[in-house]
Amino acid sequence: MYKLYKKGLDFISAGQGFMLLILLPFFLKGDTNHRILQSKLELSLKQKIKRMLKHSSEMNIDSVVNQKIQNLDDKCIWFMWLQGIEEAPELVQNNYFYLKRKFGERVKIITTANIDSYLNMPKVIFEKWQNNFISDTHFSDIVRIQLLVTYGGIWIDSTAFAQENIMTLVEDKDFVIPRTFPPGANGKTITVSSWFIKAKRDNAFLKEVQKKLIYYWTRKNVLVTYFLLHYILIITSEEMNNYLDQSYPIDNTLPHYLMLQMRKKEMSKDDIKYLMNQFTIMKFTNKHISDIEINNYKILNSLLQERAGHGKSTD
Figure (spheres, rainbow, N blue to C red):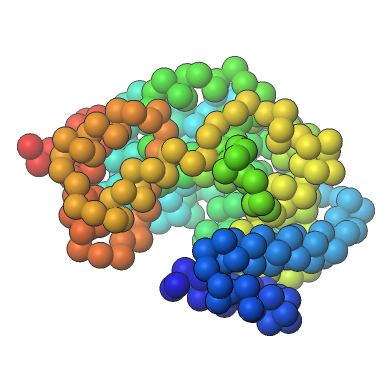
């Protein structure tokens, strides 16, 4: 019920309060109607964002924005922790050092101190981030898209663990992004995630996504929804002949399985190790809601340290 309450507040803050009020009777009639309500609200929000971005195609992005500053190819693996890896949580450090162990100098970490040595961020975006109109989370949305448009390569969130084989598998693919597929996608408006993206430099789809992001933040100081980038990805795909449907398939459901299990119940080291070996890519979180989850993450981190060759194992 808390998640539904939080979802309701999110839609009110996004200006969807009237629609929520109209559909409120569904809210009180079980899980099926909850899903119907969420779908209706998401569709309404999607239409609102489309209207907000109606004239984004008329916007011209200065050519210098996507010019390379460094002579890098599209083999780069992009990882971001603005405060620097030394200040990152244990999970983030373990994910980073695993990638460094496997891929060496291909892994580039983006921080507040070095971002301008990689990107020519639009001035208005940079200033709004510095003045806290754009949060670090949503600034990272803009950064990941600009990095991939400018250089190409693989973006991986700091809380995602990708084993060597999946990173190697997608190297020669034009575009890869996690998606939810039918039947799980049935009735969902947002069927894409952005925590892992592989793209060639100057990818036409991401250039359109970038234009919409910059257009939005040039004109707005308030976030319409936490999932702004996800809505823009879906909207842009629809405008480009369902581009996402033509991309290399990476499932967005199974990578969350271990994270969700660790949130629900106590798990042994053998349990976590077994599940880690089932999936080539996994999404975790730094936000823990119980002592059970905290203890599970202690075990997870000890296993990640072994793979990263960083720090001491708790064996």
